[in-house]
Image (cartoon, rainbow, N blue to C red; front, side, top):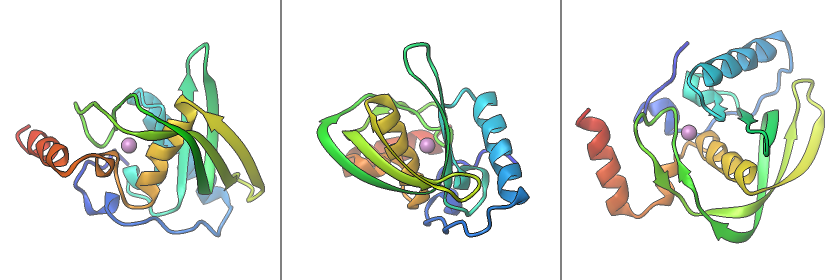
Length: 160
Ligand code: CO
């Protein structure tokens, strides 16, 4: 399985809640981590590799900020000031753009065994969670930008 590129229709429809916490899920998540690391990504949503389950993985490898997690059926509650950093996306090769995001993100999710968890993230992990949650909802990071900017980005992707 490879990365699915925008505007593949799999990226444009919401994912479906995971109900089966078995080996297949664990295998799929292992694959997601492998592909994400191969591509030097720090987050990846299941629909970016053609799966339909509501799952994303995060692997932030920096010394000052380190986070490795699997989020199954995540729900976000956003708060705090708006912040932005230049975001890239493995489904949008070569595109890097600032996206307004909330600085604080409370995430409720299940792990690979179906156990419920809740965590609060700030800064980069909060941004990554919002970026990946967009994917699971059938949106992408450019949906948060003005229409004209979206059009420019689409034109850039097509001209490649
Ligand atoms: Co992305």
